[in-house]
Image 1 (cartoon, rainbow, N blue to C red):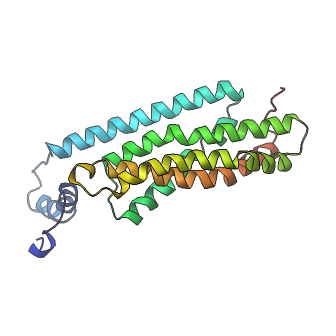
Image 2: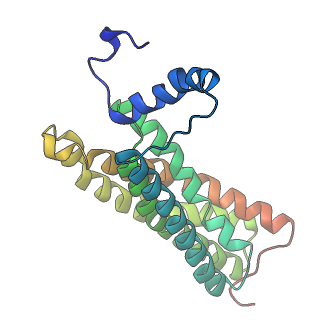
Length: 218
């Protein structure tokens, strides 16, 4: 049983998870013919989560297809799209720092963020390919591209994060639904901005070592 002192503050998702973990297994052992179905909020949340995952997958495939046309390659777009999982690092840490559970609005914010973080990567890789097309070594091109795009990428991300700060600081009841979404975008963008400038050029250099990249003139 759940102690009364542990139930003073909880949400439906936490109570349902504890019910499935602590109570239902023992009930199934005693009554093996019982079947359980969760309706209402639990069912709607599962349906929404599944729909959102499919929508995000379709969106990422769409981004990949567009990048394939842009770069005329099937491997270079993967370098650009590395910014999407890198943003997830910031999303997770952001929720932990703010002390807020990862919820449906958080997932919605991350799905929206996926289309934003690739913009910086696209510009960085285009500058990098232009430097390579000018005849520079891949390591020189990586360094020049990161330095040339540093200010533009940093300022673009900072203005977006600054615009979300008032929402992150809001404590009204109406804002509680939107705060997880803002956390995903702000902290995910913060992390991806730093990692894009460092990791994307390294990934491009690795692909170049295998001869899997093309120059602009090709």
